[in-house]
Length: 488
Image (tube, rainbow, N blue to C red; front, top):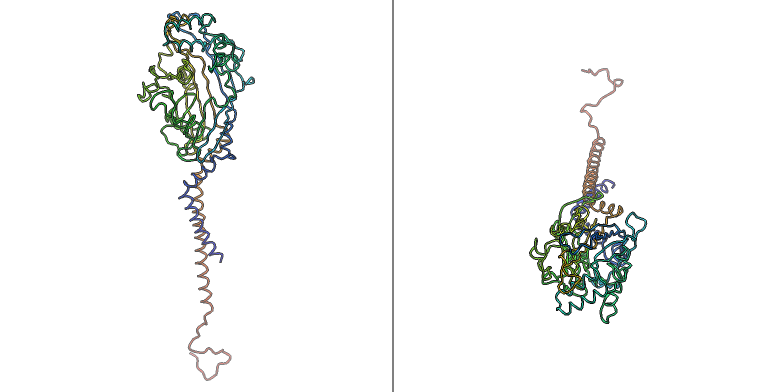
């Protein structure tokens, strides 16, 4: 009986190991789908609804010679001050889940890190007066008398092209601005009460609009379907208005060495990151994607010409004035990295560095999990001559750097351990298959060997029980021999 059990055990092991080997990909994907399921009680959902704190470094540019701005023989010179370290916690609000997509709004809470090494918020900095520069940019196409009135109003408020404030005031606390003080009191005009790069944004819900994101774990996992209820924006023209790509938090399984697309309301558009190389971080293999030409205006890729907003400028600086209330806001990578040299040559103090300023993302190819992100953006303000307004008279046309902000997120050791296990599963599957195959064959061998030996033993026992054949002559003991018999 035990021999039969051994035989069937061997057959079962071989069949089971072969099934696991043949259907491993399907089992693998099933486990991944379960681990990345988007449900209110799942880890993926909890991490998405409220992300862990992310270190954010902000660098401000101190304008060291603002008094020479109208002297065309002297370049504006800037000194980078920073980093001013903050912790950012991004969360979701107004969440509504439907059959295959979820609606939500975002908020970001920033906290200054006083313990870590970095600059103090009490630093005094000369920075671009974004309010005054914006007024000039919006008035450049107005009539003569309108410009004269604007010029008179600006002069009466003693407005300058730069402000001298502390880093704390320039960033989140804000500062009193004489022009904003008047504009904010005008009915039906949406204007902040104070100046400041991030004044009024900390913890405010919905500044980035409303997102509708596909959450079913298929080829569209994490894709932004609608932004503010629409499939396209009205910031640019043609195809450049399309809302497409991931929200930057989830990506479909089984990544390829091609490209990834992300939509960002901060950029007012979708950003394309091209595959660069395979990398290994903490023992985990990943694909690196870089946004090398993310701010191209048609110079490198002609299809990007629809981002020009009426005036195509050299590549590497991107016009977002249409989605920033008409202010002369232009984005680039920090220190004009990977931009046309015309921008760096117009000012002093720029030191582009690929290691520090490249925008890239590294994904684990099988699960699509984000392993590492370095995302740096620089805000630049355009100053230029505006006729009939004294403040802007005789100004050169220069893109002035204001600040750049860098987010760098690296996977934790715990996540790296899980991804290493995930990537090792195919190898473990091979080990499992060969182990079960060897055990199964061994069981079958011992079962057959036992059956053979048992059969041989039965044959020998049968042979020993047969009667022994006697000779034709009866053997008579010597004691019973008769005298008259002659033995030969």
